[in-house]
Each structure stands twice: as C-alpha cells, then as structure tokens.
Length: 390
Image 1: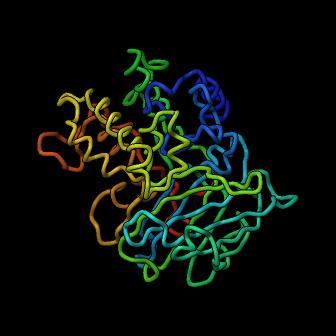
Image 2 (image 1 turned 45 degrees about the horizontal axis):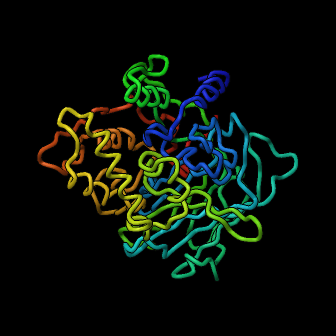
C-alpha cells in the first residue's frame, strides 16, 4: 500500500472501536497499549503510537538459520516509522527477559539503552550510540551489578561485543505479516453483519505490513550459555519523574492484544508473568476463557467447553514465549521464527479450531482459519536476519 493509502486507512481506523470486542485490534502487539497512545481512552484505535519508542511490536526466539549452535532473540519497536518517524528512546530501557528454570521470573536479562540521535544522521536511519548490559540471577530483576556485553551505533553495523554475543540495532523491514484490513472487516462483520468496505479475511488478502519499517534489536547467543529450554518476554521501561515506569510487555504474539479488553491492557503490561495467572482474582485468565468461548461459538462444532477453554488459558497465560531446542512443537508454542505463521494458528485456536490436536472432539479448523497472507520474502539468511528497510 502507498503511504497515501496507509495514511487514509489510518484515519479511517480511528472511527472503529475496540472496547466491545477484544479481538478487534491491530496486530501481534503493535499499538496494544493505551498508555502509550496506541489506543485512545474512549476505546478507539489510534493510527500510530504517541510513544512508539517504548511500544513493542513483536518478540522472536529461534535457532540461528546460519548457525545451529546459536539462539536468536529479537524485538521490534516503534511501528510504521517510515510513515510517522521515530527512533530509540533516550529515556527507555529495552529489556530481553530470560527465564532459565520455568518459574516465569527472569534469571537473565539483556538491557539496551540508547543515547541522543547524532546530528547530521539520516532521519530515516537515525544514528544513536547504545550499549547492552547483561544481568544474571536476582540482578536480572533489580538491574544491579550488570556487565556491559555490547556497544555500538544504531544502523552502523554489528556491535562490538564480549562473551561471543552478537548484537545489532536499527531500522529494519517489519517482519510481521497480516491482513489487517480484512481482519478488521471480519471482526466488524461478526458484530454488525457488515464488513468494513466489504473487505474481510479471505477476500483479496493484503499484507498491511509489507512496506512498513520498524526499529529492531537483535541478539545472537551461543547455545552453550543457555539451557535447552528458556522462556522469553520483552519489556520496556521509561524514566519519568525520577523513576522507571512500566511501558510495554510481550511474550507470545497477540495475547494482550486479543484477549484483554481495553480497560485491562495497561494493567496486563504492568503485571509480571509470574503473577499473570492469579493476579486480580485471575482477571487475565478469565479474560482468555471468556474470549475463547465467545469466538469459538462461531465454529460449526460449537463453543469450547469450560474445561477446554480453561486448558487453553493455562497455556496462553502467563505470556511467555517458551523455546526449547529439542522440542518439535510448532510456533508459538515453541519459539517464534520470522516466517512462522502464528496468525493462522491463533485465528484457528481463537475461533474454535484445534490445529495442535489437543482435543479429541474437535477438528483442526476454526471458524476463521486463515488471513490468506504468507511470510515476507525479504528475511535474510545471515545476522541480523530481519530484512533491509524499505
């Protein structure tokens, strides 16, 4: 889509509310946080984030395609920066949280901080000095006594590193793929009987993100420094009034975006994974169960049973992207690579399908089986793997 069409669509999207149905939202995690300006206080989708520098789009964990002995973790932030501009925040911590023992608490953290934009650098590829500090044990939660493991300049090539780490930060092509306009049309049709502009999933699929850029931080870590199974989630924090405040949080794609109504999204972003299943009398788990039962009722087999919805909620909450080098499970149950079609999996699961074969009385296909969009073609075979910016 051309920038003019994208801008026009962004304006039109403002008129669509997301407060009634949690599934009527944007993307994997793009613009999910009302506190960051991605959704307005009265329940409308904002065309872009007012604080995109702390707005997480997506989190990825996968085996390095060019070296099976390394694990890649990546986060993208600041959606659609080639349309709206943006750089890494100078008052923002970008945090990769890694759980090494299954208790949903960080035992390892990589924290990136960025300096001011260099004068004279390109507005499309702003240059900022940055460093990444590694914290271990309880320090991964308090951020005391860390060790600098990478330092460099955004959009300036690979960082200088220690301990065989590889690091890169800067502008890349947004790797996410999704028929956003068709999804909004389908979601609206489910509520009103009429799709927006006649568009819906399966009708002229269009990848809304194909020409968009984002900021990315990519790390490649030797497997020898990690256990076989890890849990990963990303968080951002921003400095305000003399203290660090919670920004955004994400593990698996679309958990907060799809399952929590507007009133609960910021609260979810502030709740650590170790408390998400039980906090606020189990509010977030109940949100997942209620959403699954509502949308699965559209399936020809009828809604999930209480037990089935609860079992799925037990997998989806807490919001941690689990990755095991020895597991054969598909994404997003086992990591997430750039080309993994997590949207098709989640559309099926949310609308009553059982693509993973968990329940004997349900077939694999839900009421909305696919958005009709496949992976991008610009992913790289070598580090940093995300495509070059448009």
